[in-house]
Image (tube, rainbow, N blue to C red; front, top):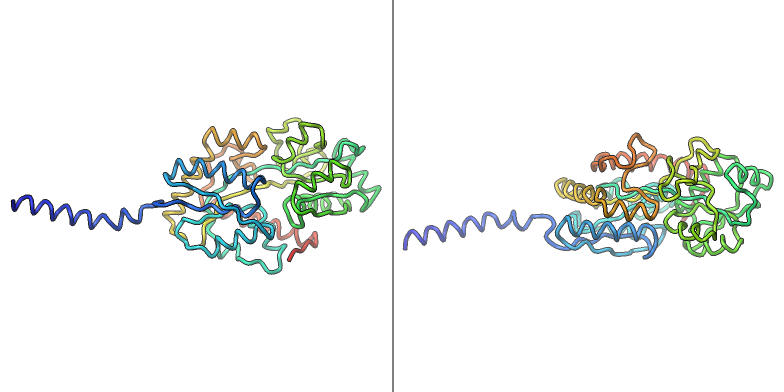
Length: 335
């Protein structure tokens, strides 16, 4: 009897001692992944595909929540103000952590102080597409046409300050051309007017342009990334087509609120790394013209090992510096 009592007490003490450790095991409940853009767009699709893989690797549901508005700022601000416990994450983008910090005079979050970069998710090209009736058959002909007719070619975009808009601003700056920017409330109405000829060109997100290209509704002239896209292998890069040094990658990544414990950041980085190197996710992203590798104008190539959290942090800092310069040169502003 005494022996059984001692064993019972020892077991209870062991369970009590292990309790805090078990309670602190991460993750122990569902995780919320905030996508700061509407459903159906490229960021939303990438986020939902990733969430499926993370659910498997983390052993807890990763639930996508769309918090759209103000170019991604509303969703980003919501995550910036969330508890730093790893259960609320942001699918940040070139917009929220590259362009917006300079574009918006009153940003509702500090991109450096309020976030901990965790892992790169995707990188892909935008694509320069034109209405099929436009005589320009390549980038050089488009540049020549724009220089002969300053301000007369209309360039559609999904909104002021979007990566689509800023891809065009960089193109103007590097080619010495003058295009007339026509911002829309989203990519779909811009595409509609491009197909209808009300605007003549657009730097569109590749995933949403691919179906239109396949049907001949728009004509691709070049992709914006440093290397050709596997989705359009016969389409040159803007740099190859006559604008040396031009490079824009439309990237996305996971961010946590600042001060998230390092062990949680490392756990998430490993889980994202496992997801983006999976055959299934690489195949689905490639079908949409994106890489889970890092063809980002650095020394890394598509298919490289996933970035560590520290490497991703440095990359985000470099992107912010790059787009600060471009936004200032363009004179673009948003409120």
